[in-house]
Length: 267
Image (cartoon, rainbow, N blue to C red):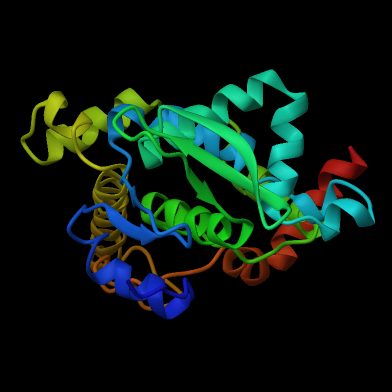
């Protein structure tokens, strides 16, 4: 069995193979065991997101001192769940949803922390090293969260970004519920709600984003053709729309954000 390097090239390969086909990703462990990383279904997506936000995407390097920074992410999360029963339950749920494990345990490999996965149909515990956990974590996040970006962001920059998105949104708008999103995708594709709930979270997210982008494109194009509205930049077709990272809007609209922040501060 060949051990893979989970880098950008490998993730790109997965995007055009396993992710595209909504297939499980096979990962071979150094303990000579295999695990399957499962795509999350829409019916489980809200639980999944809650688990991820509470366990897999914590700012380890900015949440403690030098000792925490020196830790691997697996060592860090093991310390967290050992002291927090709620996060422990969420982490177990995540391991069940993504890896099919019925339970977990903490062990050691070569005197270093290892995560044990317990399966009902397997007598042996499958142990994951810190390096393997980093790989698996990355696959889980990129497999299921379409716009996931693992670029490390300093807390000060993160705060500025949160302020930007808060201030740039319409204060009168409300958050769209997951049920409304499911119904929108179902209605657009002439599907039953049950069919949408059985989709992978990845497919659902792509479908939903395409629906929104198409609506926005049609509105803007109609306004442009009417002759009553002029746009500074050419309207991109929603299919060929350039993919932006989480920093693009922030820096493109830096002056507007500054004005809004200053206006809020001066009130």
